[in-house]
Length: 371
Image 1 (tube, rainbow, N blue to C red):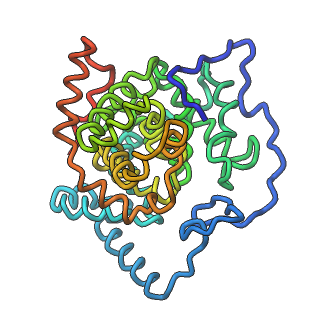
Image 2 (cartoon, rainbow, N blue to C red):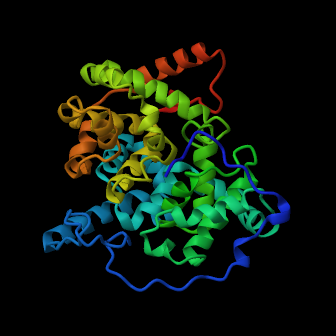
C-alpha cells in the first residue's frame, strides 16, 4: 500500500454515504488463526505464526509476570501513577520486556494519557459518531477493508470490526478537521481496536496526535506530511553517521529513506511488520516516544548491514521492504535497538532541519519530550 505523501480529499456531501447504509457482507468461513487472531498462512512455520506448544513452566512464568503487573497497576489502574513516580526505572524495564497481552489495552491507555482524556470528556465520542458528519466518510469506507485484512475482527465486509474502525476514524476526522483522515491512520486505529473499545481507541488516537504525554504526532498526517519529512531527514543523517558504509552504498544506489521508511513512522511499524514485533515496539513507543522508531530502524539496518551493502538498487529496495524473519525477532532486535543512543542527536537534527527549512516544523516539537 502506498501511504503517499499527499492527503486524501473527501468526496462531496451530495455523494456521502455512512457505513450504516451498507449491509454487512457474508461472514467469512472459519480458518485457523494464530494467538493474535490473524489467519495462519499455510506455509508459515515461524514460531510466532504457529501456536507454540507452551510448557507448564512457560505458563507459570507468564502468570508470575501478570501478577507483578497487576500489583504495579492496581485495580483499574488506580496505583499506576504512584508506582511510576516511585519506581520509574522498574516500569521502563518491564515495559521494554513487553506488557502482558491480557493487560496491554489498559496499560496503553495509562501510559499514553488517554484514560484521563476520556474521563474529562464524557459523551464527546458518542456525539462525534452519531450526530456529526465528516467530509472523509467515503474515503474511510473505501479504505477500511485494507486494514489488517487477514485479522478475523476486520474480515467481514461492513461487519462489526469494520464498523468500529469506521466510527473511530470518522470521529477523529470530525474532532480534528485540520488532519481529517489520511490513509495509514487506519492501521493505528485498527491496532488499538484489537485491545480496547471504540471510545478508548478514539481517545488514545487523540492522545497520540495531540501530544498528551509525548510530542504530538499530527504532523505525520497534515498536508505535506511535515513531520514525516523531518523524521526522514533525521533518520537519513543517523544512518550516514552510525552506519557510514551503508550510508555511502545508499548514496551510490540513489536510495533515500522515503523509499522504505515513511510507513515506519506513519504507522509506527504496524503496517507490514510481524504483529508480535509491532506490539513490543508499541509498548515502548507509548512510554518513551518516537525515538524507538529511529532505534528499531537503525537496528534493522545494522543487523542486515553486511547483506545490504552488496545489493544493487532493485534488490536493495526489495530487501529494505522485506526484512528476513530472523531480523524480526523482538528478543534479538529490541535489545540491539535499546543500545543505540539517539535522543541528543535527534534534538540537534531537529533544530538543524528547522533552520534549513526556515520555520518550525508543524506539530513537530518531536524529539524534545523523549525520555
